[in-house]
Amino acid sequence: MARASFAILRRYPRLVIFPLISGAALLVVLGAIAVSLLPQLGSMHDLTHGIWDKLGTDGSGNIWFYVVAYIAIYVLTVIGVFFNVALVQCALRCHAGQEPSVRDGLAAATARFPQILGWALVTTTVGIALNAVESFLKDKLGFLGSFIGGLLELGWAVMTYFVVPVLVTERVRPIAAVRRSSAILRQKWGESLAGQARFGLVGLVFYLQAAALFFIGLAILLSYGAGAMAGLGPLLMALGVLYAVAIGVVLQALSTIFQAGVYLYATTGAVPPSLDRDLVENAFRPKK
Image (cartoon, rainbow, N blue to C red; front, side):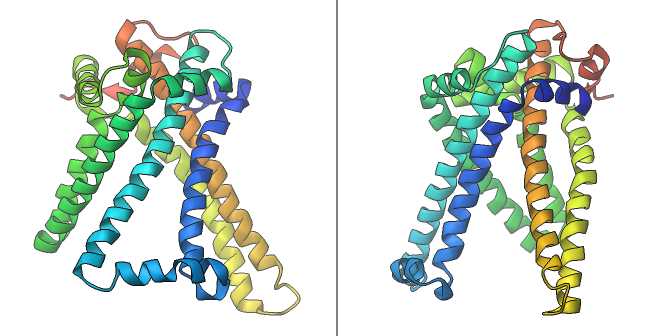
């Protein structure tokens, strides 16, 4: 299944630019926050340390901290959804046998910006609420609470699996898109999602390779210190991190390409010629 989607990505490698940009935006924001918290890095910390101190001083400071955190998560979600919509638009063109373009994807995302803002608000709010519920259940019930919270998050992920393709093609409001996504799943395959799990297993193999590079480099760094091989450790650690980032970008692109193909099959009943019929029809297994 990964190979079937990879054939499209290999033919149109420019599609990787969408998850790459959204991932870069996330890293920039997280990097800026990390830099602002380190006094060793000078001016950035001097500029922001007063804000961090104020946010943590009293109860009102904590409230403002959560408000700022919510806004930051929302903005990052908008960026992620925007470029995911652009990627879905290009993937749909690929499955239809048309030539995709970055400009076309960005234009489609821009045209759907109100829907993107609305969906980002819904998914951010629900995501934070589910996280809070899971934390509460974990405190009260321990492992059982974590398990229940995880099931709630999985249920939300399954219900919203087709939301972005629905936003791209049907241009409905966020709540209507959730209902439509859930209806597509119930109508075609029931409740047991398996397609994304297969991509996760494929990705796990490569993530283990990235982790091996990182920890081998860390072991070399700790073992040799400032010795002759001191430079090899940080190099392997950096390669491991870059490899993991590249894996994440490629898997995101592959997953979205396959998702778009399955959506077309779900709504039209015809398997796109770019994907294998057996793979698509068995991506979701009916509940017995």
